Image (cartoon, rainbow over all chains, first blue to last red; front, side, top):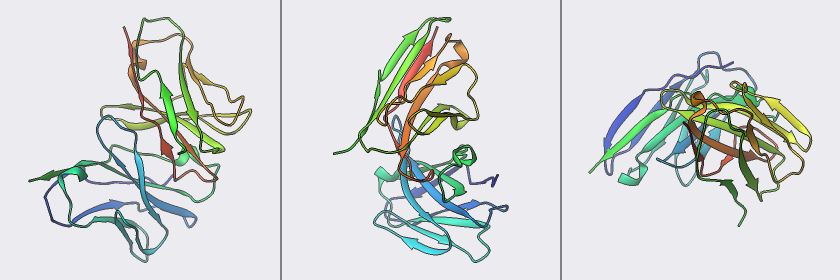
Length: 113
Length: 112
């Protein structure tokens, strides 16, 4: 199982770019990297997933170096509403590996005015 | 719009009682999952199903059971509720992979 390590908490100010890094040293060849966002009293929400290099969507960017042992979730120009817990997960692309999905405790991002 | 719903949203029960939490999705997803979330533990997988009549144990399955009789529903049953099962329970579903899951709003269960 590819264990992930991410900071417990981060603070930022409105309008800044926030980068949350996740370490996954023993990631396997067929593993993908996935990030979720969870607001208080809600279920987690899928944000982005990637395998290598850079992936961008309307919410965030995901940077994955060549060795894939870490990844960085980048949130551009955060607002107060981006305050949430962010989870990094590593799992095989195919179905059948649910037991390998480990959410961990995530990173609590607090955006300050 | 497709969605995933859970009921009840809040439940208080007594130790030893049987409790069933409902999960219903209209995504027509094959895969469904149950998690519990406790302070300091993140989300932990209880049971999951990859299709009708298929069920599998997750990381913390003791004291819980599920059954999948149709695509839309995966009810979670606590056979004999214990105070250690006080938690927030989330149901999720996904199409043909595990990593992109759609979560329900959660059920807060208190066992007294």
